[in-house]
Length: 315
Image (cartoon, rainbow, N blue to C red):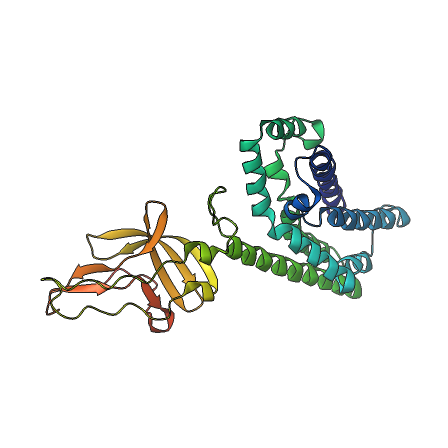
């Protein structure tokens, strides 16, 4: 299975290189620097996987098609200097995957000739009815399969020394995968997801958002006392984005607000969408014990002072 799937993966990488990357450069759709940003290290990846496939072929031929020992070949690929190089180019390519898809999609919308080129390339038999957006993620998908494939090999390996080598190679694959996953997350946090035509598109994600601290509510009949101060030192661009996503903020049993939550390294930030912007906004709820009958809730919560429950249904 390792041999067959590696052969299929090399074939798909060559499709990406020969049917898309190289013709895009020849036809002048992108210059070399632009393509290096969209498909970074693609040629290196093709070479690395081809060399690995050739080593598997050679091993199979030398062993009479019944392979008893594969540990040395696996370690030569995934451990040491070669493993570090593979990790580096894989991370470089996979971390730009979302950027590549967005750039190509934007180009297709604006350039009818480019859109026609993509459609014609995708219709060729070598693509096997896959679209470009399906082919680009194949490297990341391949990285996730290596540990599982090697685990299967260990279960079929009786010799202890050989099994130890395969297990070590599997651990190297897991480390490579973890590193690439982290690089992908870091790049997503850095680039974020703004509309392609947004002037802030290529700014770091937290700089794209950069909400101002919520204004201090003005005292009125509902808030006769001095209003609370806005949270201090909440410049989110100086922090690390851990997670971003939609959330329902339940203010009371009868009042819920849909927000975009930012989980930072030390803050939880609750943003509301206002037209095309994300803004910070205080919320209030009626509480009988309060002297003024209302409690103001900040959209910025410091994690060190937050309380959590597995089932947060109560007040």
